[in-house]
Image (cartoon, rainbow, N blue to C red; front, side):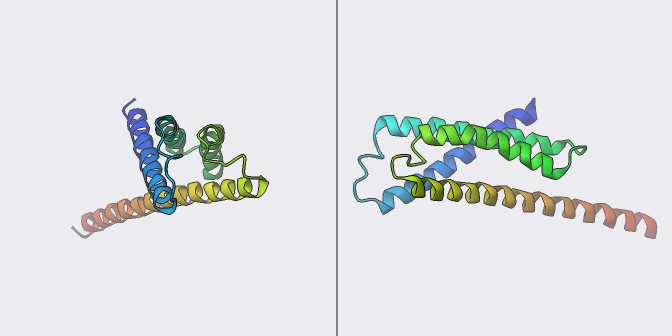
Length: 147
């Protein structure tokens, strides 16, 4: 239960962080910010960011099950995230559905690349953590053998 609560908290924090950075970029790049800073838009962005963060973080608990191949774990994890993300992205107007198919496709590809970039960053981080832990274990084994 503790692990689930931690994943939910990390998901919310990550969702809020990504939303804040994205909103900052949009606000700095846009002359007329009145469309973005409405109460309705901000509330929608806050809630959707939190839910999307949870949708990508909570399913990552599947990586704790070593009996499932990593390719299937990744497919399940990202699949759940995307099933929740895309409807919310349309609702939150993160995907500009009124701008034509080209813009929609570019937006979706960009979002896929960003999410897999984040996934890959976590993959590298945890791979490095495992490497460090294994090194410490092997160092202790060598010290015991030399003793």
